[in-house]
Each structure stands twice: as C-alpha cells, then as structure tokens.
Length: 160
Length: 160
DNA sequence: ATCAGAGTGTAGCCACGGCTACATTCTGTG
DNA sequence: CACAGAATGTAGCCGTGGCTACACTCTGAT
Ligand SMILES: [Mn+2]
Ligand SMILES: [Mn+2]
Ligand SMILES: [Mn+2]
Ligand SMILES: [Mn+2]
Image (cartoon, rainbow over all chains, first blue to last red):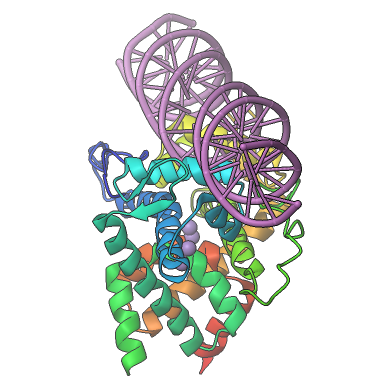
C-alpha cells in the first residue's frame, strides 16, 4: 500500500484480446479492474487497523506494547509482533526489542487519515438509520473500501 | 464461511483475564470481537464474489467456464480453478473436468442473497450522493461487510 | 538480591489466494 | 480426419496472516 512495489496480483489491465470483430458485449474490462481494486484495498486494511490502534494506545497509554496491541485486536502476541515488523518494513513504525512500538511521520499521518475516515463512516451509517452497535461493527470492515470520492460524498451528505 | 468448521483464527472471546480489581477501563472485549468479525467477513468475500459471478454467467451465457470466470475476476485461470475446488469443498458448486461449473442449491441461494445485497449497497451509495463509478467500485468491497441489520436500515432509508 | 511471572521474541506449522510453467484434453477448421 | 490452438488441469513457488510451543528478558515483590 504505502509502497506499491507491485502490490499483490492485479492482472495487467492491458493484456486483453483484440476485442472480437463485432460488438459482442464489451468484455467488461471494468469489472476485472473493480475486483482487483477491491482486492488491493483489502491488503492495506490490516496495516491501517494496526496504525490506528497504535496511535490510540500512544495517546491514551503513552506507549504501545505488543501484548496490548494483540489483546485489542484479538490475535496472539506472536501474530501482532510479526505484523509489527511488517509495519517497520513498510516505514510506518519503529520498534526496538522490549521498547514498545512508535509511529513514523508517515505512520502518524496515515493514522490520522484512517481515524477521520473511520468516524465519518460510522456517522454516515448512523445518519441513514443503522443501529449503533451494527454501525460500529460494520464500519470496521467498510472503512477500508471507502474511496476519497465516496468519503467526500459522505461528508457532504452529513453536512446537509 | 458456509461451513464454519473453525473459521480462520478468531481468538476465543472467553479467555480474558479476571479484569483487574479496580475499574480500570473495561478492557474492551468489544473491540477485539469487532476486529475478529471483520476478519471472518473478509474470508467469505472471495467465495461470495465467485458465486455471484458464476450465477451471472449461467444466466447470461448458459455456462460458466473457468477461463471466463478468471477473465472477469482479473486473475489467472489457475487461480480461478483452485478457488472453484474450494467452492466444491464448501458445497457451493459442482464441476467435473472440462464440463464447466454449476451451483448447488446452497450456492444459488447464496448468490441470490449476495446479488440483492450488492444492489442495495450501490443504491444506498448513490442515494447519499456518491458518484456512479465510485459507487460501483467501492460497493464491490463494502458489500462483504454489511450485516443484516445494516442492510435492513439501508432498505428503510431507500424506501423513505 | 532473588526469582516467579509477565512480557517479548523466534521457530515452525497451516490455509488461502496470488502467480508461472508445463501437461493434458477438446474442438473447430481445413 | 487431422491437428493447431484454445481451454483446462496440475505442480510448485511466494507472501500474508493466523496459530502453538518454546526460549529469553524484564521487573516488581518479597
Ligand atoms: Mn478496520
Ligand atoms: Mn477502524
Ligand atoms: Mn465483492
Ligand atoms: Mn458484488
């Protein structure tokens, strides 16, 4: 995500056949690209949640320790630690053994955007009548698939 | 998903510590469960997309061949074939070599629900002012995180 | 100062969902 | 009827994100 080195799969949009002679159904290049985008969005989701949570912990507790992160996410500490090293590799976090996790500038910035988006999504859901608990729950997954255009529309709708 | 044999990870909600003596922040069992649910939702997403697409192909083309499925999803045929065998394993589809893919009753039923939900999500997005293309795009990911409660709320909002 | 217990880290396993490369089977023309 | 080319299937590789088991390091009470 941060480093779209080649990001997952995502088949090259170009390598399409010459599109049959007649107008036999556009072959839908759009559809494939939509699925592809949804897939890559998903790949960033986990990192986004980590970064948002770490930022929260740093504010509220003053530190973000692997065990806390693991507990809050509902995964084993081993899993959390492995993902934290991925955050480091992606340049979003820094951490030295037994010393807790911190966010880089990039990490903080991402956390901010993610937090804003999370709130907007919850608010939008509430605004259209989704019950609180469902809104909180579903937002956790939905947020990662909301594009800037959609987010902007949500904002306009809420300010109405 | 259909067969929640043990479904991915999803840490046991129960194994929580005795919750410190004083009232030191509820320890948020909710948060972990929310992340967990979002994770399992994701695990079903791919199968949902396959089933919906296969159903579409069966209606429009009369058959669903691996290559078509692969092209529409933007993945290699090898990937599609592997996922198709997972669909078989999950009891959603049937397929014999060189004979195309078909849906079981369970598969058809899932496809129907998925299609309905997909449409509702797109309509909701359009209704709150999301531009068409963004709506189509984002819906492809969002749909998999919309609970029944939220879906019902969307329906009410649109019928308003 | 000790040391039990909590927290961290590492190793190794698994399933999923991508891919490429190669082998096999169909099928429509010629 | 042959057979080239398309479709299908198989094998094997990779990274992610889970897990358990075990080893190491800290730290707060005695
Ligand atoms: Mn989330
Ligand atoms: Mn969030
Ligand atoms: Mn989808
Ligand atoms: Mn869909």
